[in-house]
Image (cartoon, rainbow over all chains, first blue to last red):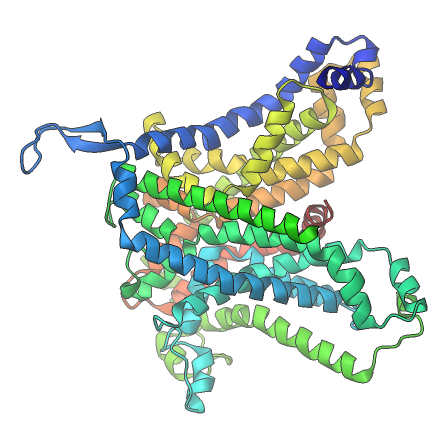
Length: 318
Length: 283
């Protein structure tokens, strides 16, 4: 099978012009190699380094009660993983991230889909202003967006609470029960327009004749949305959900910025915040070993989620 | 386009609701930007006491002076760093992405399938999780606290490769390559003189995505760079924000000036964004 395949493929393109197959392979690799080298350096090597680091720890050679002697990297087996998995902050952070994702992703994707459908409906003719306006927040870096919303939330500055306070119902955006919602709003604000543009592109790729045919058959506009538009955007929407799940696992900027004005959030609000602060020694357990262990645990978690999602999606499609 | 509606004219209520939702959404997305623009001109006192939506006494100059003083005159240097890191990563990353896209699309290479799998895995990998191990690796390589620590990882863009391959397949005809080969052009010359020329618009799109992703990255420079002079504007402003009782107008002015280059790129090159997102959506 494979041999036949190769022979069949060898027949076209390069080979017949007298360039040898090895020449083609060499030329191909010339173009692949810069990326392959960079990928090895920035993806593969760090994975190896983190696995290695996760099984080691810097321990003093002295061995006395207070250590003493030089710090030496020592193999400690699964001790880092055991310690990290026994850290309540990791599970609390993971719980927050999951809660955040379950709430934020459907709201954001739903909003993006609604806006894309409205812009595609041609009820409104001049859509450029809306398209650009919705997408603009994406051009604002996550940290800056977090900074801006943190000020908009802060009790002394908040323009929202200026209005709500006047009618006697100000919102405490920094309340521990409220902070995830406040954070979810930051992310939604940044990425809803981006996803909206992706959905809009998918919608506009649908041939208009399909709608004409449906109308001739007596379909209502609502029916066209449900039976044609939504199924046609579904693949793009499902990919957007998957990418949002992966983005949520790495939640770092928003909690880090919010923590500057809310010290109660600590240095371990999400797993990524925990990993960073473990590395810089600002959270327990600290050091390269535990920080790497947190990263690996989260990567595995992301892999399991992505695989589960892909399975669920395949089952739904059937 | 009006023909698309055929006989079914939208009802008046539908039109009104659509407009209301769209305008409401526009206020949600642009309101905070407007608030920042207005607030960047105010003193702390006016921020506490005047309406957030209306300008008060003009304190632009004072806030700007404070911004420069608090950043120890590093503010524009930070913006310059962001421009440099993003542009360097954008140029290198675009060339690398287009090259590998070309290699994958036009050559039968042993291992090409593995590279393709690596690109897909890279697209889905939670990249922030690599920051800690990258830091450990770059310590050993002596790259920590140099611009390379930010530029090199930012050059690797699986999404750029994905776009590069799609564009090569769509706009580089085999016949043209064959003709160039028959004329005796070397493979490198074909790539630089023929392929890159055909891909110019696509390269703008890939450049934009890498440029913005690099500018927006916060965790990587936060981890890698400690010297004040090397910080990009995102890390610099974060440091400013954590001051006790800052002059908000100054911080907000910094936020505004720190995203201005992005906004210009964004508005000026918006059709290239559209192109990149569209190919992501349709594939």
